[in-house]
Image 1: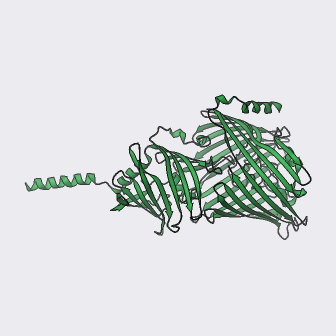
Image 2: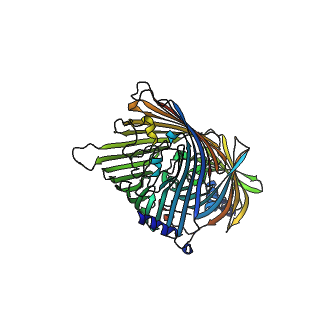
Image 3: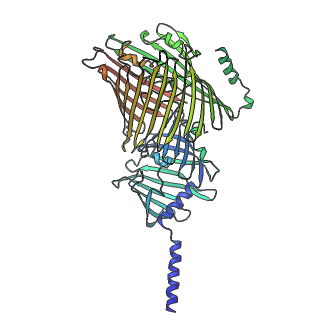
Length: 248
Length: 380
Protein backbone atom coordinates (compact mmCIF):
# COMPACT_ATOMS: atom_id res chain seq x y z
CA UNK A 1 0.00 0.00 0.00
CA UNK A 2 2.79 2.35 0.96
CA UNK A 3 4.57 1.55 -2.30
CA UNK A 4 1.42 2.29 -4.28
CA UNK A 5 1.09 5.69 -2.60
CA UNK A 6 4.72 6.45 -3.42
CA UNK A 7 4.18 5.42 -7.06
CA UNK A 8 1.00 7.47 -7.35
CA UNK A 9 2.77 10.42 -5.75
CA UNK A 10 5.63 10.07 -8.24
CA UNK A 11 3.25 9.81 -11.18
CA UNK A 12 1.44 12.91 -9.96
CA UNK A 13 4.79 14.70 -9.78
CA UNK A 14 5.67 13.65 -13.33
CA UNK A 15 2.35 14.81 -14.72
CA UNK A 16 2.79 18.14 -12.92
CA UNK A 17 6.23 18.45 -14.53
CA UNK A 18 4.72 17.83 -17.95
CA UNK A 19 2.34 20.72 -17.47
CA UNK A 20 5.13 22.97 -16.20
CA UNK A 21 6.68 24.57 -19.28
CA UNK A 22 10.38 25.36 -19.32
CA UNK A 23 11.51 28.96 -19.86
CA UNK A 24 12.74 28.06 -23.35
CA UNK A 25 9.37 26.52 -24.22
CA UNK A 26 7.56 29.66 -23.07
CA UNK A 27 9.81 31.92 -25.19
CA UNK A 28 9.35 29.54 -28.13
CA UNK A 29 5.57 29.68 -27.78
CA UNK A 30 5.63 33.50 -27.63
CA UNK A 31 7.88 33.57 -30.70
CA UNK A 32 5.56 31.22 -32.57
CA UNK A 33 2.55 33.27 -31.52
CA UNK A 34 3.99 36.51 -32.88
CA UNK A 35 5.63 35.13 -36.04
CA UNK A 36 3.77 32.01 -37.08
CA UNK A 37 5.23 30.04 -39.97
CA UNK A 38 5.05 33.17 -42.09
CA UNK A 39 3.52 36.60 -41.77
CA UNK A 40 2.77 39.62 -43.93
CA UNK A 41 2.22 42.87 -42.05
CA UNK A 42 1.59 46.54 -42.60
CA UNK A 43 2.78 48.84 -39.88
CA UNK A 44 2.80 52.54 -39.11
CA UNK A 45 5.64 53.75 -36.93
CA UNK A 46 5.47 57.08 -35.12
CA UNK A 47 8.63 58.53 -33.65
CA UNK A 48 7.60 60.85 -30.82
CA UNK A 49 9.95 63.55 -29.55
CA UNK A 50 9.10 66.44 -27.18
CA UNK A 51 8.65 68.98 -30.00
CA UNK A 52 7.90 66.93 -33.11
CA UNK A 53 6.82 63.59 -34.51
CA UNK A 54 7.77 61.64 -37.61
CA UNK A 55 5.87 58.83 -39.31
CA UNK A 56 7.20 55.88 -41.26
CA UNK A 57 5.05 53.28 -43.00
CA UNK A 58 6.28 49.81 -43.64
CA UNK A 59 5.21 46.61 -45.31
CA UNK A 60 6.99 43.40 -44.42
CA UNK A 61 7.01 39.69 -45.14
CA UNK A 62 8.77 37.05 -43.09
CA UNK A 63 9.10 33.30 -43.03
CA UNK A 64 10.42 31.56 -39.95
CA UNK A 65 13.49 33.15 -38.38
CA UNK A 66 15.55 33.05 -41.54
CA UNK A 67 13.79 35.14 -44.14
CA UNK A 68 12.50 38.69 -44.09
CA UNK A 69 11.77 41.38 -46.63
CA UNK A 70 10.68 44.88 -45.59
CA UNK A 71 9.62 47.76 -47.81
CA UNK A 72 9.37 51.38 -46.69
CA UNK A 73 6.17 52.92 -48.13
CA UNK A 74 6.39 56.39 -46.52
CA UNK A 75 7.74 59.07 -46.05
CA UNK A 76 8.47 60.23 -49.58
CA UNK A 77 12.22 60.55 -49.10
CA UNK A 78 12.66 56.94 -48.01
CA UNK A 79 9.87 55.32 -50.02
CA UNK A 80 10.98 52.25 -51.99
CA UNK A 81 13.91 51.42 -49.74
CA UNK A 82 13.94 47.72 -48.99
CA UNK A 83 15.68 45.44 -46.50
CA UNK A 84 16.32 41.77 -47.16
CA UNK A 85 17.42 39.19 -44.64
CA UNK A 86 18.48 35.66 -45.57
CA UNK A 87 19.84 33.73 -42.60
CA UNK A 88 22.67 35.96 -41.38
CA UNK A 89 23.03 38.01 -44.58
CA UNK A 90 21.43 41.42 -44.80
CA UNK A 91 21.04 43.86 -47.70
CA UNK A 92 19.57 47.31 -48.19
CA UNK A 93 18.23 48.38 -51.60
CA UNK A 94 18.35 52.13 -52.28
CA UNK A 95 16.28 52.85 -55.40
CA UNK A 96 17.31 56.52 -55.63
CA UNK A 97 20.93 55.58 -56.30
CA UNK A 98 20.17 52.18 -57.87
CA UNK A 99 22.37 50.32 -55.45
CA UNK A 100 22.20 47.33 -53.15
CA UNK A 101 24.29 47.71 -50.01
CA UNK A 102 25.52 44.75 -47.97
CA UNK A 103 24.92 45.58 -44.30
CA UNK A 104 27.30 44.49 -41.56
CA UNK A 105 26.31 43.14 -38.15
CA UNK A 106 27.55 46.37 -36.50
CA UNK A 107 24.38 48.13 -37.71
CA UNK A 108 22.15 45.76 -35.70
CA UNK A 109 22.27 47.78 -32.48
CA UNK A 110 21.68 51.04 -34.33
CA UNK A 111 18.45 52.95 -34.51
CA UNK A 112 16.17 51.89 -37.37
CA UNK A 113 15.52 55.03 -39.47
CA UNK A 114 15.85 57.37 -36.49
CA UNK A 115 13.37 55.48 -34.30
CA UNK A 116 13.81 53.89 -30.85
CA UNK A 117 13.62 50.44 -32.46
CA UNK A 118 16.95 48.93 -33.43
CA UNK A 119 17.75 47.40 -36.80
CA UNK A 120 17.77 44.07 -34.99
CA UNK A 121 14.23 44.64 -33.68
CA UNK A 122 13.09 45.25 -37.24
CA UNK A 123 14.87 42.49 -39.14
CA UNK A 124 15.24 40.11 -36.18
CA UNK A 125 18.65 38.94 -37.11
CA UNK A 126 19.04 37.50 -33.62
CA UNK A 127 16.50 34.96 -32.42
CA UNK A 128 15.05 35.16 -28.92
CA UNK A 129 14.78 31.35 -29.02
CA UNK A 130 18.11 30.24 -30.48
CA UNK A 131 20.56 32.99 -29.52
CA UNK A 132 19.79 33.12 -25.78
CA UNK A 133 19.64 30.87 -22.75
CA UNK A 134 16.41 31.27 -20.77
CA UNK A 135 15.61 31.32 -17.07
CA UNK A 136 12.13 31.48 -15.57
CA UNK A 137 12.52 33.94 -12.71
CA UNK A 138 9.01 34.56 -11.41
CA UNK A 139 5.39 34.96 -12.28
CA UNK A 140 4.27 38.57 -12.14
CA UNK A 141 1.28 40.66 -13.08
CA UNK A 142 1.86 43.28 -15.78
CA UNK A 143 -1.18 45.51 -16.24
CA UNK A 144 -4.10 43.04 -16.64
CA UNK A 145 -1.88 40.08 -17.63
CA UNK A 146 -0.59 37.22 -15.44
CA UNK A 147 2.89 36.74 -16.84
CA UNK A 148 5.96 34.54 -16.78
CA UNK A 149 9.02 36.70 -16.14
CA UNK A 150 11.92 35.25 -18.14
CA UNK A 151 15.54 36.35 -18.18
CA UNK A 152 17.38 35.87 -21.49
CA UNK A 153 21.19 35.80 -21.53
CA UNK A 154 22.89 35.74 -24.96
CA UNK A 155 24.84 32.63 -25.82
CA UNK A 156 28.55 33.22 -26.09
CA UNK A 157 28.85 32.61 -29.83
CA UNK A 158 25.66 34.54 -30.73
CA UNK A 159 25.99 37.94 -32.43
CA UNK A 160 23.54 39.72 -30.15
CA UNK A 161 23.12 43.44 -29.50
CA UNK A 162 22.07 43.15 -25.84
CA UNK A 163 23.78 42.01 -22.64
CA UNK A 164 20.51 40.83 -21.11
CA UNK A 165 16.82 40.80 -22.02
CA UNK A 166 13.92 40.39 -19.56
CA UNK A 167 10.56 39.33 -21.02
CA UNK A 168 7.10 39.20 -19.51
CA UNK A 169 5.00 36.68 -21.43
CA UNK A 170 1.32 36.25 -20.62
CA UNK A 171 0.28 32.85 -19.27
CA UNK A 172 -2.83 32.96 -21.42
CA UNK A 173 -2.02 33.16 -25.13
CA UNK A 174 1.75 33.63 -24.74
CA UNK A 175 1.67 37.31 -25.58
CA UNK A 176 4.89 39.34 -25.22
CA UNK A 177 3.46 42.00 -22.91
CA UNK A 178 6.61 43.74 -21.79
CA UNK A 179 10.35 43.45 -22.47
CA UNK A 180 13.36 45.21 -21.00
CA UNK A 181 16.65 45.46 -22.91
CA UNK A 182 19.92 45.81 -20.99
CA UNK A 183 23.46 46.49 -22.23
CA UNK A 184 26.58 44.52 -21.22
CA UNK A 185 26.98 46.66 -18.08
CA UNK A 186 23.47 45.65 -16.98
CA UNK A 187 22.11 49.16 -17.55
CA UNK A 188 18.52 49.37 -18.84
CA UNK A 189 18.49 50.80 -22.38
CA UNK A 190 14.96 50.31 -23.78
CA UNK A 191 11.59 49.15 -22.51
CA UNK A 192 9.05 47.57 -24.85
CA UNK A 193 5.33 47.37 -24.06
CA UNK A 194 2.61 45.70 -26.10
CA UNK A 195 -0.89 47.24 -25.78
CA UNK A 196 -4.37 46.84 -27.23
CA UNK A 197 -4.38 43.08 -27.68
CA UNK A 198 -6.50 42.01 -30.65
CA UNK A 199 -7.36 38.73 -32.36
CA UNK A 200 -5.67 37.96 -35.66
CA UNK A 201 -7.14 34.67 -36.83
CA UNK A 202 -6.63 32.33 -33.88
CA UNK A 203 -3.84 34.42 -32.36
CA UNK A 204 -3.98 37.25 -29.86
CA UNK A 205 -1.35 39.93 -30.22
CA UNK A 206 -0.74 43.56 -29.25
CA UNK A 207 -1.82 45.93 -32.01
CA UNK A 208 0.15 48.85 -30.55
CA UNK A 209 3.74 48.52 -29.42
CA UNK A 210 5.86 51.16 -27.74
CA UNK A 211 9.57 51.44 -27.11
CA UNK A 212 10.77 54.00 -24.58
CA UNK A 213 14.51 54.66 -24.12
CA UNK A 214 15.50 54.52 -20.43
CA UNK A 215 17.53 57.72 -20.46
CA UNK A 216 14.93 59.74 -22.42
CA UNK A 217 11.54 59.05 -20.83
CA UNK A 218 9.90 61.94 -22.73
CA UNK A 219 10.45 60.26 -26.09
CA UNK A 220 9.18 57.04 -27.59
CA UNK A 221 8.41 55.17 -30.77
CA UNK A 222 4.95 53.74 -31.32
CA UNK A 223 4.33 50.93 -33.79
CA UNK A 224 0.71 50.46 -34.86
CA UNK A 225 -0.34 47.32 -36.67
CA UNK A 226 -2.53 48.07 -39.68
CA UNK A 227 -2.59 44.52 -41.00
CA UNK A 228 -1.40 41.08 -39.92
CA UNK A 229 -1.80 38.07 -42.23
CA UNK A 230 -0.46 34.89 -40.64
CA UNK A 231 0.66 31.62 -42.19
CA UNK A 232 0.38 32.88 -45.74
CA UNK A 233 1.74 30.64 -48.48
CA UNK A 234 5.08 32.19 -49.40
CA UNK A 235 8.00 30.61 -51.23
CA UNK A 236 11.62 30.94 -50.05
CA UNK A 237 12.33 32.47 -53.46
CA UNK A 238 10.20 35.47 -52.55
CA UNK A 239 13.09 36.59 -50.32
CA UNK A 240 15.46 37.40 -53.17
CA UNK A 241 17.59 40.30 -54.37
CA UNK A 242 15.47 40.31 -57.52
CA UNK A 243 12.25 40.71 -55.56
CA UNK A 244 13.53 43.36 -53.16
CA UNK A 245 13.90 45.72 -56.12
CA UNK A 246 10.35 45.27 -57.41
CA UNK A 247 8.15 44.28 -54.45
CA UNK A 248 5.13 46.51 -53.79
CA UNK B 1 17.53 58.59 -82.52
CA UNK B 2 14.10 59.67 -83.69
CA UNK B 3 13.01 56.09 -83.40
CA UNK B 4 14.12 56.11 -79.77
CA UNK B 5 11.88 59.13 -79.17
CA UNK B 6 8.97 57.60 -81.03
CA UNK B 7 9.41 54.33 -79.20
CA UNK B 8 9.02 55.93 -75.79
CA UNK B 9 6.20 58.21 -76.87
CA UNK B 10 4.34 55.11 -77.96
CA UNK B 11 4.86 53.59 -74.54
CA UNK B 12 3.75 56.66 -72.64
CA UNK B 13 0.67 56.99 -74.81
CA UNK B 14 -0.13 53.30 -74.52
CA UNK B 15 -3.88 52.90 -73.90
CA UNK B 16 -4.25 53.21 -70.12
CA UNK B 17 -7.17 50.78 -70.28
CA UNK B 18 -4.66 47.97 -69.91
CA UNK B 19 -2.98 49.55 -66.91
CA UNK B 20 -2.87 47.30 -63.87
CA UNK B 21 -1.73 49.98 -61.55
CA UNK B 22 -1.83 53.74 -61.36
CA UNK B 23 1.35 55.63 -62.20
CA UNK B 24 3.55 56.54 -59.23
CA UNK B 25 4.86 60.09 -59.04
CA UNK B 26 7.54 61.23 -56.62
CA UNK B 27 10.40 63.69 -56.43
CA UNK B 28 11.61 66.76 -54.65
CA UNK B 29 11.94 70.48 -54.93
CA UNK B 30 14.85 72.35 -53.42
CA UNK B 31 16.38 75.78 -53.14
CA UNK B 32 20.09 76.11 -52.62
CA UNK B 33 22.13 79.31 -52.41
CA UNK B 34 25.90 78.82 -52.49
CA UNK B 35 29.09 80.84 -52.39
CA UNK B 36 32.49 79.91 -53.75
CA UNK B 37 35.79 81.63 -53.11
CA UNK B 38 38.95 80.62 -54.87
CA UNK B 39 42.17 82.22 -53.77
CA UNK B 40 43.80 82.15 -57.20
CA UNK B 41 40.88 84.03 -58.74
CA UNK B 42 40.72 86.38 -55.77
CA UNK B 43 37.00 86.63 -56.22
CA UNK B 44 33.80 85.55 -54.52
CA UNK B 45 31.18 83.87 -56.68
CA UNK B 46 27.63 83.10 -55.70
CA UNK B 47 24.80 81.10 -57.13
CA UNK B 48 21.14 80.50 -56.45
CA UNK B 49 19.73 77.15 -57.54
CA UNK B 50 16.10 76.11 -57.75
CA UNK B 51 15.97 72.40 -58.40
CA UNK B 52 13.06 70.08 -59.05
CA UNK B 53 13.12 66.35 -59.69
CA UNK B 54 10.14 64.35 -60.92
CA UNK B 55 10.12 60.56 -60.98
CA UNK B 56 7.37 58.87 -62.88
CA UNK B 57 6.96 55.11 -62.75
CA UNK B 58 4.22 53.06 -64.33
CA UNK B 59 3.72 49.31 -64.14
CA UNK B 60 1.19 48.98 -66.89
CA UNK B 61 1.22 45.20 -67.04
CA UNK B 62 2.51 42.37 -64.89
CA UNK B 63 5.83 42.19 -66.74
CA UNK B 64 6.09 45.71 -68.14
CA UNK B 65 7.15 48.93 -66.55
CA UNK B 66 8.29 52.36 -67.68
CA UNK B 67 10.40 54.80 -65.62
CA UNK B 68 10.96 58.43 -66.46
CA UNK B 69 12.87 60.96 -64.33
CA UNK B 70 13.36 64.57 -65.19
CA UNK B 71 15.59 67.14 -63.55
CA UNK B 72 14.66 70.82 -63.85
CA UNK B 73 17.14 73.41 -62.69
CA UNK B 74 17.18 77.19 -62.68
CA UNK B 75 20.58 78.62 -61.82
CA UNK B 76 21.35 82.28 -61.41
CA UNK B 77 24.33 84.27 -60.16
CA UNK B 78 27.97 84.59 -61.08
CA UNK B 79 28.60 83.99 -64.77
CA UNK B 80 31.78 82.03 -64.05
CA UNK B 81 29.73 79.25 -62.42
CA UNK B 82 27.34 78.77 -65.32
CA UNK B 83 28.33 76.51 -68.18
CA UNK B 84 25.52 76.59 -70.77
CA UNK B 85 27.50 74.43 -73.22
CA UNK B 86 28.01 71.81 -70.53
CA UNK B 87 24.33 71.43 -69.76
CA UNK B 88 22.85 71.87 -73.25
CA UNK B 89 24.14 68.51 -74.47
CA UNK B 90 24.27 65.51 -72.16
CA UNK B 91 26.78 62.66 -72.36
CA UNK B 92 24.31 60.11 -73.76
CA UNK B 93 23.82 58.83 -77.29
CA UNK B 94 20.55 60.76 -77.53
CA UNK B 95 20.50 64.31 -76.22
CA UNK B 96 17.84 64.50 -73.52
CA UNK B 97 18.95 67.87 -72.12
CA UNK B 98 17.72 71.35 -73.04
CA UNK B 99 18.61 74.87 -71.93
CA UNK B 100 15.35 76.81 -71.92
CA UNK B 101 16.66 80.00 -70.33
CA UNK B 102 20.08 81.36 -71.03
CA UNK B 103 21.38 84.79 -70.09
CA UNK B 104 24.47 86.41 -68.72
CA UNK B 105 23.58 85.45 -65.17
CA UNK B 106 20.85 82.89 -65.61
CA UNK B 107 20.59 79.36 -66.90
CA UNK B 108 17.51 77.16 -67.01
CA UNK B 109 17.85 73.49 -67.91
CA UNK B 110 15.67 70.42 -68.18
CA UNK B 111 17.28 66.99 -68.50
CA UNK B 112 15.83 63.51 -68.58
CA UNK B 113 18.28 61.23 -66.77
CA UNK B 114 16.00 58.17 -66.68
CA UNK B 115 13.80 57.07 -69.55
CA UNK B 116 13.59 53.32 -69.88
CA UNK B 117 11.30 50.37 -70.07
CA UNK B 118 11.64 47.17 -68.08
CA UNK B 119 10.42 43.74 -69.03
CA UNK B 120 10.66 41.27 -66.17
CA UNK B 121 9.50 37.67 -66.30
CA UNK B 122 10.61 34.78 -64.10
CA UNK B 123 14.41 34.94 -63.79
CA UNK B 124 14.84 37.48 -66.59
CA UNK B 125 14.92 41.26 -66.49
CA UNK B 126 15.48 43.36 -69.61
CA UNK B 127 15.88 47.14 -69.52
CA UNK B 128 16.14 49.47 -72.48
CA UNK B 129 16.68 53.23 -72.60
CA UNK B 130 18.31 55.87 -70.46
CA UNK B 131 19.13 54.27 -67.12
CA UNK B 132 21.65 54.25 -64.32
CA UNK B 133 23.81 51.12 -64.36
CA UNK B 134 25.44 51.18 -60.96
CA UNK B 135 28.01 48.43 -60.58
CA UNK B 136 29.90 50.15 -57.78
CA UNK B 137 30.32 48.50 -54.39
CA UNK B 138 32.57 50.99 -52.61
CA UNK B 139 31.59 54.27 -50.98
CA UNK B 140 33.78 56.93 -52.64
CA UNK B 141 35.63 55.47 -55.63
CA UNK B 142 34.08 52.93 -57.97
CA UNK B 143 36.45 51.38 -60.53
CA UNK B 144 33.62 48.97 -61.56
CA UNK B 145 31.19 51.82 -62.30
CA UNK B 146 32.13 51.89 -65.97
CA UNK B 147 28.79 53.04 -67.43
CA UNK B 148 28.25 56.28 -65.53
CA UNK B 149 30.89 58.22 -63.71
CA UNK B 150 30.27 60.90 -61.14
CA UNK B 151 32.07 63.24 -58.81
CA UNK B 152 31.97 62.40 -55.10
CA UNK B 153 31.76 66.12 -54.30
CA UNK B 154 28.50 66.65 -56.22
CA UNK B 155 26.30 65.92 -53.18
CA UNK B 156 23.23 67.55 -54.71
CA UNK B 157 22.85 64.88 -57.39
CA UNK B 158 22.73 61.51 -55.60
CA UNK B 159 20.73 59.90 -58.42
CA UNK B 160 23.59 60.53 -60.90
CA UNK B 161 23.24 60.74 -64.65
CA UNK B 162 22.05 57.84 -66.77
CA UNK B 163 23.35 56.27 -69.97
CA UNK B 164 21.57 55.05 -73.10
CA UNK B 165 21.79 51.32 -72.75
CA UNK B 166 20.36 47.86 -73.05
CA UNK B 167 20.75 45.64 -70.03
CA UNK B 168 19.79 42.00 -69.54
CA UNK B 169 19.88 40.45 -66.08
CA UNK B 170 19.47 36.79 -65.28
CA UNK B 171 18.93 35.78 -61.64
CA UNK B 172 20.46 32.35 -61.00
CA UNK B 173 19.00 32.21 -57.51
CA UNK B 174 18.05 34.51 -54.63
CA UNK B 175 21.55 36.01 -54.23
CA UNK B 176 23.34 35.48 -57.52
CA UNK B 177 22.91 37.05 -60.95
CA UNK B 178 24.60 37.71 -64.26
CA UNK B 179 24.16 40.96 -66.17
CA UNK B 180 25.10 41.99 -69.65
CA UNK B 181 24.93 45.67 -70.55
CA UNK B 182 25.83 47.78 -73.56
CA UNK B 183 25.66 51.58 -73.73
CA UNK B 184 26.36 54.12 -76.47
CA UNK B 185 27.80 57.52 -75.58
CA UNK B 186 27.49 60.92 -77.32
CA UNK B 187 30.38 60.11 -79.67
CA UNK B 188 28.62 56.91 -80.72
CA UNK B 189 31.19 54.80 -78.85
CA UNK B 190 29.95 51.62 -77.20
CA UNK B 191 30.75 50.35 -73.73
CA UNK B 192 29.76 46.72 -73.22
CA UNK B 193 30.43 44.41 -70.31
CA UNK B 194 29.36 41.34 -68.39
CA UNK B 195 28.96 41.23 -64.62
CA UNK B 196 28.60 38.15 -62.46
CA UNK B 197 27.51 38.64 -58.86
CA UNK B 198 27.31 36.03 -56.11
CA UNK B 199 27.24 35.57 -52.32
CA UNK B 200 29.37 33.14 -50.36
CA UNK B 201 29.98 32.85 -46.63
CA UNK B 202 28.48 36.27 -45.81
CA UNK B 203 30.41 38.09 -48.54
CA UNK B 204 29.13 39.46 -51.85
CA UNK B 205 31.49 39.13 -54.81
CA UNK B 206 31.40 40.29 -58.39
CA UNK B 207 33.54 40.03 -61.50
CA UNK B 208 33.27 42.23 -64.58
CA UNK B 209 34.74 41.91 -68.07
CA UNK B 210 34.17 44.02 -71.15
CA UNK B 211 35.31 47.06 -73.07
CA UNK B 212 34.94 50.73 -72.34
CA UNK B 213 34.16 53.35 -75.01
CA UNK B 214 35.79 51.14 -77.67
CA UNK B 215 39.17 52.23 -76.32
CA UNK B 216 39.98 49.88 -73.43
CA UNK B 217 39.47 46.30 -72.40
CA UNK B 218 38.28 46.17 -68.80
CA UNK B 219 38.68 43.38 -66.27
CA UNK B 220 37.61 43.94 -62.71
CA UNK B 221 35.89 42.75 -59.59
CA UNK B 222 34.67 43.71 -56.15
CA UNK B 223 33.77 42.31 -52.76
CA UNK B 224 31.66 43.51 -49.87
CA UNK B 225 31.07 41.81 -46.57
CA UNK B 226 31.18 41.62 -42.83
CA UNK B 227 34.41 41.11 -40.96
CA UNK B 228 33.44 40.89 -37.28
CA UNK B 229 31.06 43.83 -37.56
CA UNK B 230 33.42 45.75 -39.82
CA UNK B 231 32.03 46.38 -43.26
CA UNK B 232 34.89 45.59 -45.60
CA UNK B 233 34.70 46.45 -49.30
CA UNK B 234 37.02 46.52 -52.23
CA UNK B 235 36.81 47.20 -55.91
CA UNK B 236 39.39 46.94 -58.69
CA UNK B 237 39.59 47.32 -62.46
CA UNK B 238 42.34 46.92 -65.00
CA UNK B 239 42.04 48.92 -68.23
CA UNK B 240 44.15 47.98 -71.23
CA UNK B 241 44.16 49.92 -74.54
CA UNK B 242 42.46 48.01 -77.36
CA UNK B 243 44.61 49.66 -80.05
CA UNK B 244 47.48 49.02 -79.89
CA UNK B 245 47.15 45.98 -77.65
CA UNK B 246 50.87 45.29 -77.62
CA UNK B 247 53.54 47.49 -76.05
CA UNK B 248 51.02 49.61 -74.22
CA UNK B 249 50.68 49.99 -70.50
CA UNK B 250 47.40 49.45 -68.74
CA UNK B 251 45.72 51.52 -66.06
CA UNK B 252 44.86 50.11 -62.66
CA UNK B 253 42.22 51.45 -60.28
CA UNK B 254 41.88 49.78 -56.88
CA UNK B 255 39.86 51.07 -53.95
CA UNK B 256 39.67 49.36 -50.57
CA UNK B 257 37.45 50.63 -47.79
CA UNK B 258 35.94 49.80 -44.43
CA UNK B 259 33.32 51.23 -42.14
CA UNK B 260 32.21 50.53 -38.62
CA UNK B 261 29.30 51.75 -36.52
CA UNK B 262 29.92 52.13 -32.81
CA UNK B 263 27.32 51.67 -30.08
CA UNK B 264 26.92 55.43 -29.74
CA UNK B 265 25.94 55.56 -33.46
CA UNK B 266 29.24 57.06 -34.51
CA UNK B 267 30.12 55.76 -37.96
CA UNK B 268 33.73 55.79 -39.11
CA UNK B 269 34.65 55.19 -42.72
CA UNK B 270 37.98 54.97 -44.49
CA UNK B 271 38.92 54.30 -48.09
CA UNK B 272 42.15 54.19 -50.09
CA UNK B 273 42.44 54.57 -53.84
CA UNK B 274 45.35 53.59 -56.03
CA UNK B 275 44.95 54.77 -59.62
CA UNK B 276 48.12 54.96 -61.73
CA UNK B 277 47.07 58.06 -63.64
CA UNK B 278 50.13 60.15 -62.80
CA UNK B 279 49.32 63.74 -61.95
CA UNK B 280 46.35 64.94 -63.93
CA UNK B 281 45.41 68.06 -62.02
CA UNK B 282 46.44 70.58 -64.71
CA UNK B 283 43.04 71.72 -65.91
CA UNK B 284 41.25 73.55 -63.18
CA UNK B 285 43.51 72.41 -60.33
CA UNK B 286 41.64 70.65 -57.55
CA UNK B 287 38.41 72.24 -58.71
CA UNK B 288 38.65 69.91 -61.69
CA UNK B 289 37.51 67.24 -59.22
CA UNK B 290 34.13 68.86 -59.17
CA UNK B 291 33.21 67.82 -62.64
CA UNK B 292 32.56 64.12 -63.15
CA UNK B 293 35.68 62.19 -64.18
CA UNK B 294 35.89 61.14 -67.82
CA UNK B 295 35.67 57.47 -66.98
CA UNK B 296 36.08 54.92 -64.21
CA UNK B 297 39.68 54.77 -65.43
CA UNK B 298 40.48 58.21 -64.01
CA UNK B 299 39.04 58.43 -60.52
CA UNK B 300 41.46 60.87 -58.95
CA UNK B 301 44.09 63.44 -59.89
CA UNK B 302 47.11 61.53 -58.61
CA UNK B 303 48.20 57.95 -57.88
CA UNK B 304 47.28 57.65 -54.20
CA UNK B 305 44.28 59.20 -52.49
CA UNK B 306 43.06 58.63 -48.92
CA UNK B 307 39.59 59.28 -47.55
CA UNK B 308 38.13 59.33 -44.05
CA UNK B 309 34.71 60.22 -42.69
CA UNK B 310 33.02 60.39 -39.30
CA UNK B 311 29.28 60.82 -39.06
CA UNK B 312 26.81 60.67 -36.24
CA UNK B 313 23.21 61.64 -35.54
CA UNK B 314 23.56 64.35 -32.88
CA UNK B 315 19.82 64.24 -32.22
CA UNK B 316 17.10 62.26 -33.98
CA UNK B 317 16.66 65.23 -36.32
CA UNK B 318 20.22 66.45 -36.75
CA UNK B 319 22.93 64.47 -38.47
CA UNK B 320 26.53 65.69 -38.67
CA UNK B 321 29.36 64.43 -40.79
CA UNK B 322 32.98 65.38 -41.17
CA UNK B 323 35.05 64.12 -44.08
CA UNK B 324 38.57 64.52 -45.38
CA UNK B 325 40.62 63.48 -48.37
CA UNK B 326 44.34 63.57 -48.91
CA UNK B 327 45.87 63.59 -52.39
CA UNK B 328 49.21 62.06 -51.47
CA UNK B 329 51.36 62.73 -54.54
CA UNK B 330 50.39 66.37 -54.92
CA UNK B 331 50.25 67.15 -51.19
CA UNK B 332 46.75 68.54 -51.28
CA UNK B 333 43.69 67.97 -49.19
CA UNK B 334 39.94 68.31 -48.99
CA UNK B 335 37.83 68.81 -45.87
CA UNK B 336 34.06 68.78 -45.71
CA UNK B 337 31.43 69.40 -43.05
CA UNK B 338 27.79 68.57 -43.52
CA UNK B 339 24.83 69.17 -41.20
CA UNK B 340 21.39 67.78 -42.07
CA UNK B 341 18.39 68.87 -40.07
CA UNK B 342 14.92 67.41 -40.47
CA UNK B 343 12.43 70.29 -40.16
CA UNK B 344 9.36 68.16 -40.77
CA UNK B 345 8.41 64.75 -42.17
CA UNK B 346 9.34 65.72 -45.73
CA UNK B 347 11.32 68.91 -45.24
CA UNK B 348 15.09 68.96 -44.71
CA UNK B 349 17.61 71.75 -44.21
CA UNK B 350 21.27 71.08 -44.94
CA UNK B 351 24.41 73.15 -44.52
CA UNK B 352 27.51 71.99 -46.37
CA UNK B 353 31.03 73.42 -46.40
CA UNK B 354 33.77 72.10 -48.69
CA UNK B 355 37.36 73.22 -48.50
CA UNK B 356 40.19 72.37 -50.88
CA UNK B 357 43.77 73.32 -50.19
CA UNK B 358 47.25 72.63 -51.44
CA UNK B 359 49.67 72.10 -48.55
CA UNK B 360 53.07 73.73 -48.36
CA UNK B 361 55.49 72.24 -50.86
CA UNK B 362 52.70 71.20 -53.21
CA UNK B 363 53.17 71.60 -56.95
CA UNK B 364 49.78 73.27 -57.07
CA UNK B 365 51.28 76.30 -55.38
CA UNK B 366 49.12 78.32 -53.05
CA UNK B 367 45.73 76.94 -54.12
CA UNK B 368 42.74 77.21 -51.82
CA UNK B 369 39.02 77.10 -52.43
CA UNK B 370 36.10 77.33 -50.06
CA UNK B 371 32.54 76.41 -50.98
CA UNK B 372 29.45 76.90 -48.84
CA UNK B 373 25.92 75.62 -49.53
CA UNK B 374 22.59 75.94 -47.75
CA UNK B 375 19.80 73.68 -49.01
CA UNK B 376 16.12 73.49 -48.22
CA UNK B 377 14.56 70.38 -49.70
CA UNK B 378 10.94 69.20 -49.83
CA UNK B 379 10.34 65.61 -50.89
CA UNK B 380 7.04 64.30 -52.23
